[in-house]
Image (tube, rainbow, N blue to C red):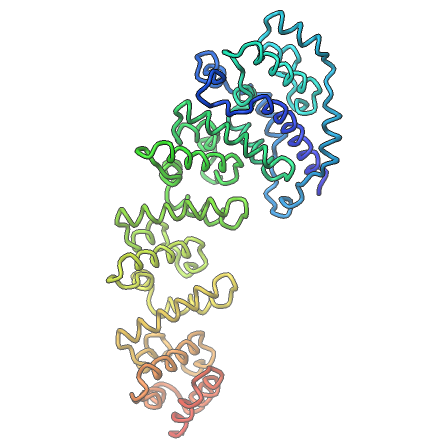
Length: 470
């Protein structure tokens, strides 16, 4: 564990220790329909809307910088002894008598927060010994004012903002000793938004998930999946839908109002490679696919939407190509009578020879090998269905122009493999390969090519038959 990670985790545990003290004062949810609930009062609503000051915001960003390395995620557990030492370090210098005096003088929880200089503590807030005193004071105040009880989540939101609290929660969920409390606090935050009748769009803004988007240049990328508070927002969408079955929405419908489909698809591909965002990305991608299906998007529409028609021979290496293939498969599943749309769409923009070249190149990379193998199988089926014989494919693949360089032509093996495929599909049909070869190549070139053909599984018997003529 790095020194920075240790400092970060220490801060998180400190915060959730004091949260534990505060929540202990509330045996039931602060949002239950009881006299304890005061969130919806005008004064509290106004406080909730006010966001952090600039210096608080900057300090919080420094404090809550989250590492994206998945190796760091497994190192954030903190031992019980560490929690115990933190508990001892948070002893307040305020005495019980001083807290009683503050209460007798009519100081509110906010007043006490400021009197203890916690509103200016910035980076040092979580290590400030006055924080536990303030928690104690909040409990005293609530006991003395049962109809005006202060809410921990409302106070934290006032000084950290909804987004800041969400960041703290998501960070603490990754630490074993604070994950349970983090989930509880997240529940309180979500319930608060529900009571205030916030829509998922409202919460998206409250969490500042799109802050800075319009300040970027056209060369910069804004990635909402890099924001830790995204998980809180997704959780809220689920709870909102449960509470409002007549107003259900999807994460995709809101995200697509900030990103076009192509940009969002690219972000989803990247997010699926990160363990902390993989599940969210898969979910959003599923919603995106469902939307396209219900709105009648054809695979060819998605192909051009992703501008894959402009990719040239780099098509198979484009991450969006895999997304297109996935959608084409889904489309075929729901439209069983339709032809598998992947290949016909590609062949609108590329010849068989061009696609075969791309397949050969893609088969050499572990990142694209699987898609290359799949496309070659589909291409062979397509040629066979179009009644393209091996003799005809000799011209289609432009092998007839190779002359003495036939054996080094990149598509020679593709032709050999198609011969094997075709002969399996039409075992009784004569191929006439010897006649076609003699029409275009010398005897030496043909024999060299046949030697190469022996390296292709299934070609041995075919080669033996052709050699009978030489």
